[in-house]
Length: 157
Image 1: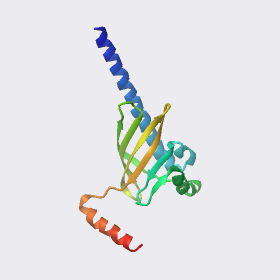
Image 2 (image 1 turned 60 degrees about the vertical axis):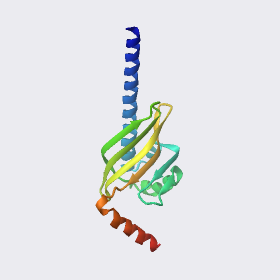
Image 3 (image 1 turned 120 degrees about the horizontal axis):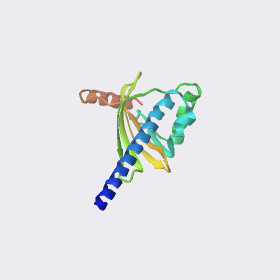
Image 4 (image 1 turned 180 degrees about the vertical axis):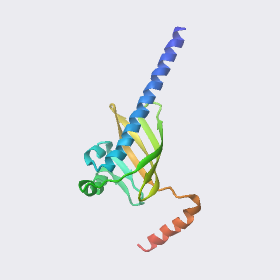
């Protein structure tokens, strides 16, 4: 009986820690969108690791965090951030509870439905984004024509 109580206690602690980590990851991702929308440069970039990578919607946009800061700074300094509203999110945690990855559906006035995916790592007690990938999902029925448009675009470059 004593062993069963110990196992149950450990299981409850693990479930509780997992729920706390999921809540913390959700809060970081919510703040990513909040601070970007507010053009809050320092708060926004504080949510990333020092070696984070941001992948934008254009194939050329694979930025180190310092490159991404350079891209964002003029807009943020002018008070213009970007607004993506999360409509759905899935979070997955590693067994040790120190790594999380996610996918989320987003809405944006200019781009419509978008998708964000990425990973966070736990540094001490804080979660930080180590990779964020922003994409615009293309319906399969439109994929070939869009792919052809992209090919034609690159031929003209």
